[in-house]
Amino acid sequence: MDNLIVTASPHITDNVSTRKLMGNVVISLIPCVIASTLIFGVKALLLTVVTTAACVAFEYIWCALAKKKNPVGDLSAVVTGIILAMNLPASLPIWMGIVGAFIAIVLVKQLFGGLGYNFANPALVGRIVLFSGFATRMTNYLGITPRGVQDALSTATPLQVAGSTPLGSLDSEALTEAVDKISGLPLMDLFLGIHGGVMGETCALAILIGLVFLVATRTISPAIPVTYVATVFVCFLLTGNGFQFALVEILSGGLLFGAVFMATDYVTSPFTLKGKLVYGIFMGIVTFAIRYFGSLAEGVSYSILLGNLITPYINDLTEQVPLGYVKPKKKEAEKK
Image (cartoon, rainbow, N blue to C red; front, side):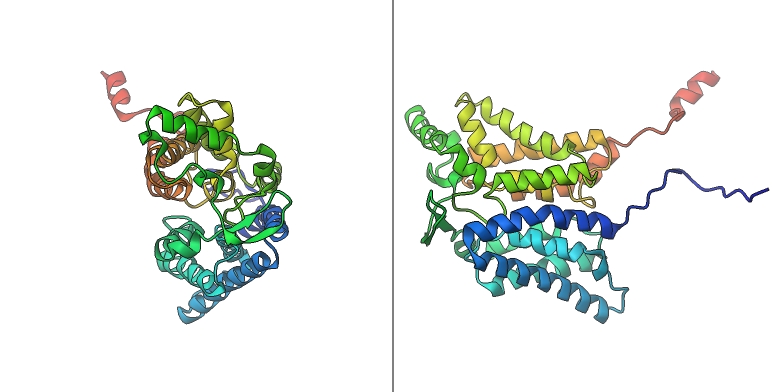
């Protein structure tokens, strides 16, 4: 008779490893890397390579100095490096990308214990710190003409075409004018990425290709990105400014990229389906509020960061009840 092994649940096992999951994410990011190189030039590819190499190097050096097991082989640092690069404008100096890599890997990831212990997405925090410290450089976007030719001058992103005044604070006449400007943007240019912005956010087509791959390989659940994007769309639709206006908001800024590649981070997103839905709706509402009522044209980074911070509470509130579990109070009532 074979020996029986008694272990705690769950008993379903899988051969999926961290390296395989991270490898799938790297593959899904390739369309964005290719698109950013085609749109912004070789400088975009160089910045991606340097930032990724810096993330791997910082992880290796830190673990060596701390005499910890080196996790470079799990590809998580590679994923962080690519995502960080895709959150940077192609015009950013290389050394600033390296600073962002240090913040992401050492300060956010390793100081908190490494993969699985970070309180927020490392690349996300790296971007926010760079934006706070080097705002001018981080908003110095390369301009793209409708023919896809680079312009040396910085240009406004689609979310900035209506100016810096919050839409929610405009009077009816000014709001109508601003909405007309936004709604008049060519949807095909937005879809293909022929406009200014950070490297990974411009081409919606590349992001959607990555999403399809991640969902097809079961690397991520579509619950978070779909709920997040749908919430933002519905909120803008409810403003009464039209379908085109809401659609432009979806295709502009870092919403799609953040929803697919950053909000779905395993460590900092909820476990349960109910939790993922709550998480997506929360980030969608915050993104809408920042974009429509705030002074920032973009709101994705801060929305995801807030979502990361409340994830432990969402997990507690949406914890799945084990099969057959009976609350203690109910048991006492039955005895009586």
